[in-house]
Image 1 (tube, rainbow, N blue to C red):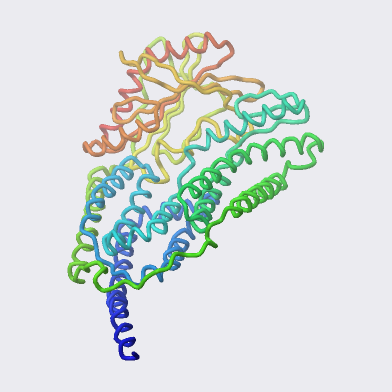
Image 2 (cartoon, rainbow, N blue to C red):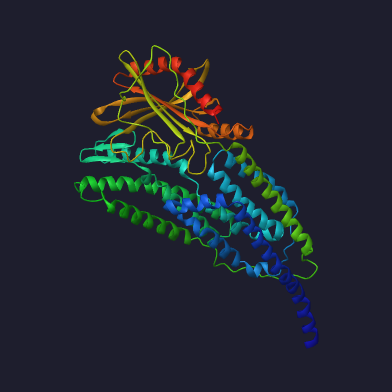
Length: 524
């Protein structure tokens, strides 16, 4: 009897011993592959950590890899009897991720490059472990995408929703409100909905923690998805209520409360209470305490066939080689695109417009770290138009034309306020171009009508996504990344005359502006 039991235990232990022997070199291979990618794509890694360091909204990115490792470690008993088998099929995803990274770099779309690098890391792990093991690690691997600092693109919409709700709630409370853009004027003071009021920080924190919470305490996909949906909706609505409560606290206290540091303290306390209530509610239907299904020791017959370690190394090296090709291709494009700082050519605007030395207004758009700038004014009789050109060359993650940091007016500008935004089609050089229009209000009630668009390698657009695509196409064609933001503006003392002034100026000046930008590009 004892002899039979001993034989059975040896038979059962055999697969575990074989699996353990396969796991040790597989983990070494994964560490090697990840280290290779992080070194090869060090620039992308740095762009991520730089954002973590300067923006508290994404500071959680530092701990996301650690959480993923912990989530995988929790599955160690489930994974112990399984053998890393390797996967040749997973290698097929490497070119797609590499191409996405390349396009992200060429177009200076940080988020795309960072998502692509994270995908390459995940694919490398799958190449080593195989599809069977990777399926059991699907959530820990997918959780790595939370390390990508993305979300700022929705900030303007979140700010608009917050302002809309706050205005509606104040009026329902009997408080008269005058709204101008994102600025709210009530009898006791003026409030502005700035980036910190968007609730993006609350939303990102809630979604990440809520997704982790749903995975840990629920087993059914339906409950997990429902809780994640709540983790998205609740912080958005809670931020609306938070903004309304802060304004009301300031209003009712005569601006003694919720106007300084306590503004942020009240906000975080309120958010903490709301999230705690959300998790307490979610815990009422938890499923992690249910008895786990009994597991049966796998026999040698049901274990997947393993690739010899030489083939496992070969598959990994092929994946890493394919990943490296895209980096080498990008370095080649960078080398061919490299050019000295541009000497921005001033446009020769034809008559009746003549240059003047007096600035139209004490205002200028906020473009971060351009390669060159031009800021001039032109007059035709009693009509004056300001022209601002911000030119970019050799763009990178910090210095690029299309960026959330480049804007006409900062939300915390003490003098100027953007009160209206729109788009309209304007004829330029015989072709219709959709441009952005904005109205600004400054000191003493001065108003400006502003038109702005992008110039990328001779193409005109006001759409951020098209501008990024045009930049990538220009670089792939070997034309470099020369791009410019063009802003023209005039006094809006009379709205009808302001629009006619800019229309007349565009018809006369657009060919000269384009010619100056093309000449600047050709002087590379």
